[in-house]
Length: 533
Image (cartoon, rainbow, N blue to C red; front, side, top):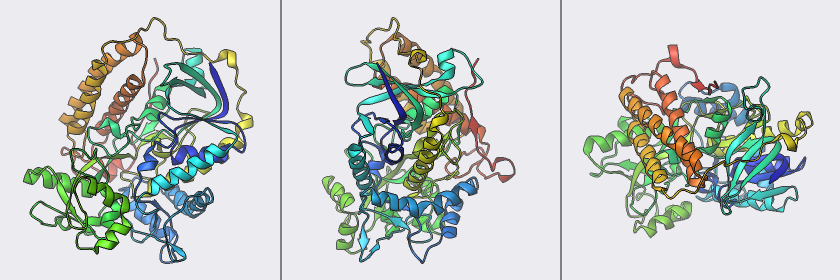
């Protein structure tokens, strides 16, 4: 079966939905999403979205904060563009129905780590859920948008794939997609394909990402021949709830923004010895500080203390976090919250220009799947939702303006999925074993602190596992679990490859063999591209 559209959107978070709503006025949009439409990383964003909305703030200040957090490799032109287009983009979200928290007649702006001013718009402490709600409602009401829930993209369809050989004029014309519930593989043919599939936190053993974050878009784009960059820059959120039943519930950075203090088990506040901003230091510094304290003192966690603030203020400012912690018998108005770092945000991804175009014509990427140059070596808190929304607008303008230049879909030239002699597998233990092994050695060898030997060990294991996955992938009928396993193995390889390339420590990439920042040789990006024989 072939599903045709003008725009194929893979992913249903703020990036994909914002693009879809703007593109749908110019053509038919098909949205493919792995679970129900609202299940995305956007939904779990607590803190908010950063933008200059106060007379006490300025574009220059936001730009400077972003550049400092990015540790010298942010693309300044991109930073300026995103920051300056922020207020307009926020107003678009408000027009789509997003209700941000207000204080009197003004928006209630808060502050997070790395920010020099209060510029975070939020909806209590469930900002992402509110944004997702509004965008989903708007998308469902648009007559030109069709949503395919419980569908997972397998691979992109390119001109090179159709020709079965490398071509000089490669392009993307759609994707093969598995209907998870029926097991049927569909062919989605489109004149424009947008990757908005989110991040890759599930590559690591401990993550605050939803289960859908398996790096699918990065893996598919790389296999198709797109350039990827800065994959070593995986951000670890410093404070996820340490509890056996919490599944790494995120404690927003906004809690520290409102005065919470990190403490050791004995009550000692330790951040002042790591950074002059103390608990409001950039995330990479806070995560490494916590990791160092835990290893130094042999503790399983550290503690986040906001008990010195008025109880009513805490309950009203963080109602969702407060209620969730109560479910685990923790009252944050009286108890210190046990926290640990966890994989949170991929600052690298599929390389794009300022219109979100990849180097494969017809293929765009926005949101966490994309490497725009905004974040550099470390993402400033609450810049991710902003980046996704700004780039969605730019991609929609460019894609709609150039739609007429793209060739019409030739149905007879696009290959349908051929499963060949593949059979059903009765050994899914192979998938679960490899999945667990990848996530564990990525955490141990390619986590917050790295070394040359650890990276070498990780790469050896990845190569062996990929051989097993390759044999398994082509011998048995595919499932969503097998697709995700293949993708996390690919992304793991890309992360290790970029980490091995960067012979220094910068931002989120810290290696004990090269502990210093090297601006003379490494004030640049790491980029890789698949070689086709």
